[in-house]
Length: 446
Image (cartoon, rainbow, N blue to C red):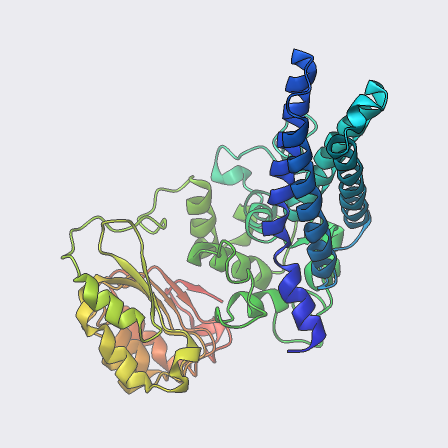
């Protein structure tokens, strides 16, 4: 591990350390206020202890914060204000500790001691507010405020499909909810801000988010399809992830020309309109992200433990429902065979509702081994080695509603096979060899 990585490692303890001085210094301030109210000095030693611990932990938080800032992604006036606010608050806390620990409160004029505590408390609040703005955005407190809040300037909710503007009503809210926390003026991850139209059109360090004359792919579409193990995946692991419908809407908007003012009805695409209408609650659709309600048999806890020990990720969609979202990270195949990994899922085959087996080198014959998953509704198969034959195999999943085939070797020859599907609502075929002219009546995104 080099020194830069080590600095970032310790820097990421800043969000944990920063809560210690906040607690200690607020407690010291409250005891001081109570003492002033009672006109006694009975708490001087307790106040001094809290100030000492607050000073020590504030100093550690300052060091960790500085190391974190070297990782990049934080810049501008807010970072400077937060840094200097933390340093000044730490110094004021240290001076206040000296005053209360050396009996100077009885020797110094009361106004000076009071001034130190008030300044320290003010600095603590200022620094904390700026830190929150760095993490959540400068308008975090005022975002929902009437008149002055940023939400107040957004388009009013549409009453019907005829009023919907795809970007303003759908795409922009998705970006704000899932992307803006890392991509704004004061936190430019990858040099990218999504705060306004000018910044969105400009792009980031990797270039434009959209298709360009020299590129056949969209940087945004590429990143949202990366596996969770990839550092370039957007949103990053640990953040709230895009849903299948949100991914479909972003792809459809970009593929259609990323227009910022175009009404939804002008797109002339039923698939886009259905997705947007469902997202806005203007269309009642069974494909709305709600979990299935039919009863499933409970799974033995030891079976889940044994499967998880292999590296397979299992998440229950709804507590007590026995419906699982299962994902096999590519990293677990380093020392294990894919076919053997898939066989380990047999114990919960009836309980798998969502399955992610992307980027695993999956072939048609291995896909055929999964047809026993009779309750599967969403299947991610991006970047595998599937051919046109795989579509016929997918038709054997009776409840399949969403399938992502991005990056596979599919051609127009597979399209007739989609006539066999009964419940299928959406198919993602970006970066396959399927041509738009041959899509026919099948609802595709891509």
